[in-house]
Length: 398
Figure 1 (tube, rainbow, N blue to C red):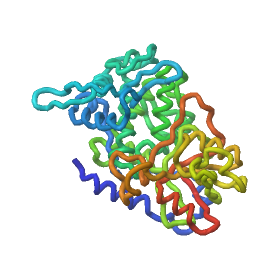
Figure 2: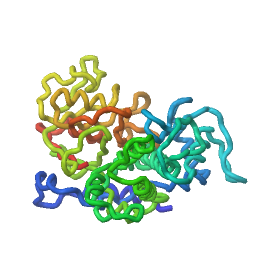
Figure 3: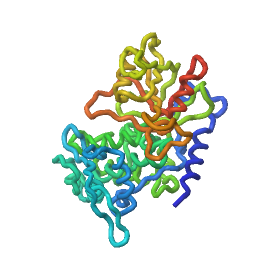
Figure 4: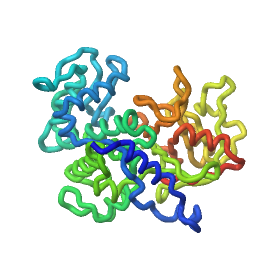
């Protein structure tokens, strides 16, 4: 297995490269990003790995361990219509054969069997909990479920300082999916979409909703398969990843170089997925807790500015909704400290989603898309923006 530290270092170096001399922020905003920003450091696996590997079952079990008994850990399909859910049960079973066995939660064992389902793709027709069969969803459902697992492990255990779910598609013109070259409209719809958004869009299709990006089920299945193989076994980036994935980032007058960010699935994306402007911190409410969750936090906020908001107390969607009502042109949410335990370490703690970890910002199904863009950044980035020179400006490339 390739040394993960080596790839993390390469990724860090790529992210810190300065913009070319003489290139203005306006010029940067006028063209789409180039691929190749991603240098590695992620771990992704095809659905076959999750179906057959005892190590995979143990890793998923570790992920399950973070949730309470009975809580949902994974789902595919649209929860508003028909979905499959996998929840922790608290009852252990044995997986694997011979000496290669492990004790895992029975919900994990069910999940592992479901990932291996095969057959013709189609919409789900029933709702099931801890199912071992993907029903009529099958190929697309198992690929989407594998992508959900890959995204979760990337953010929590493998590369929390960047996060696989935030990687975005670029230059999809000419890509072939299910034996057919993408049309200009299909490529245009996919460009700028993050892997998180692709999987969420697949959920809608699996729930019986419209197929996203103008793709057929076969094309969507092929696309998710390519994402699942992007950094197979934690190795070098695949040719697809090198040519069509990049890490969203931001630059600012508050620091040198580029700092990574992730995206939301519920916020508007402007042309070329960029936004820029002055940043104004949103202060806690008088009680010190409601961090941008109510309009009280926006007293004196200058309309048209980018709202800088600390994570915590309420949902990402609510924070950005309140920012919309306050007249913000965009929102940047920075990560928070752990609610209990020691302060933030310099490197993310495996299993932690706080401090320097990046997470993709999701929302409950069915909520309308908000009218301003939004990004999520590491805590150190947020503090640099909050405490930097006045005025602080920022340029965000999603």
